[in-house]
Length: 73
Image (cartoon, one colour):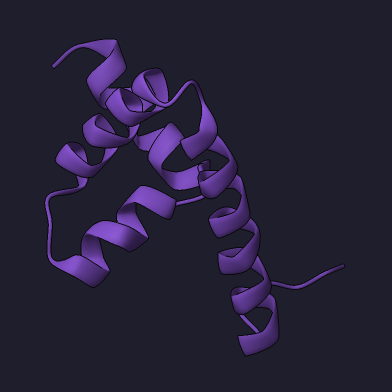
């Protein structure tokens, strides 16, 4: 197992917004394919999916705060 697989990937998955994971869980898709399609669509659409990603990340974090999953302190 390489350093990237053992340390970097779990760190990014834990502290990233989790938008691709959320979409994969909701639609029953593989997370890696959702991430890959997101990257491809970002290149094809000149970055506009990044706006969708940030809006969704904001919405998911607000949803967690409202449900009491994250403390604002």
